[in-house]
Length: 425
Image (tube, rainbow, N blue to C red; front, side, top):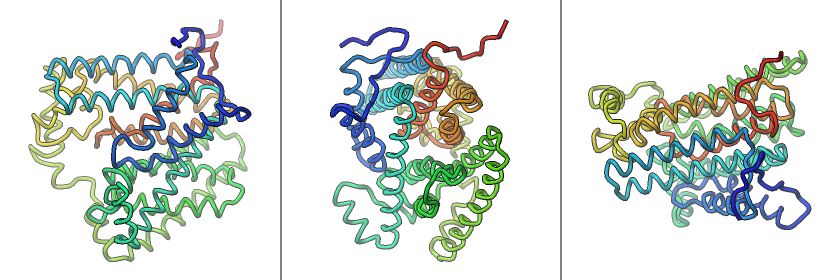
């Protein structure tokens, strides 16, 4: 059926009374509960995402007006990618980049539409899947550290990548950086439950938070460590700013102190192991040898800026390394490289609007305020990380964008949409 261009192009509500609705809920939940396995493509979560999109498109899809700017930005992004692809010479690598980008943008838009209605149940469904996926990923990787031959080799035979690479935890992901940043959202989610007393059994929450924190640390990703610290700091700050209750604020300060002590104990135990201590000493620096110099990461980025300013259509998808020695390692720079001026300016606009609508949703009293604080804190942190690494194809990054826009749409309602508040006369 065609897309309905009405005031609220709505995805059908997920209820829990009929069989079709339960199947839809299960498929959506499986996107996130299997999202820790992405060492091959299409990953299980990709298959589930495509099935979920089909489940909701076939009956006819409706998009709330508040989500339409995201739709338009993604459309501009794809136009930029396609134009750059054909102008700079179509090839197989570029085609793969286009396919992956299209899927990432569609899944993000789907999630925005999905969460914009029946918001609480749907957001909890997504969170539940990410929570389960994070716990399983952390548990498998810790087991691989203890018994690398038994656990690791068994999973590799099933199609997974090496769980430990150069002493760094990479999980069932292609890269330790992706694995560790994927774990940030579940870690911050569980930490928020502790702060707000949302967990009936606190010790169980801490029991699951511990392995996630350990696995994240053992990935030895400097960007992920900064990402985690920044997200938790923002979560605490925004929660204090939006909480009128003195008792709740006292609770936040108390459990923040408890968390610091808890994490410090875990770190002390881990760093007492000589092998881990050696890798930590090597990784614990903001700048490595390959970052500096004319042909280093930062040198390539600086050399690329004047080149891209003179190329309206960019270099083309996956073509940065044809001009320089490696990938750009900067999401903002890569937007200009892979999608030209149109894509680069669109990406800057997207990031700016993400922050704008995030702040508006966080400080607007609504039933979704605590959800918005969680997503916004993690989204800002991973966006900031895009300065030092390529994040344009990270599934969890685009999921966060979708969640943020879905919560924004739910908070303003279908008939109140306006990015800017109207002045009262």
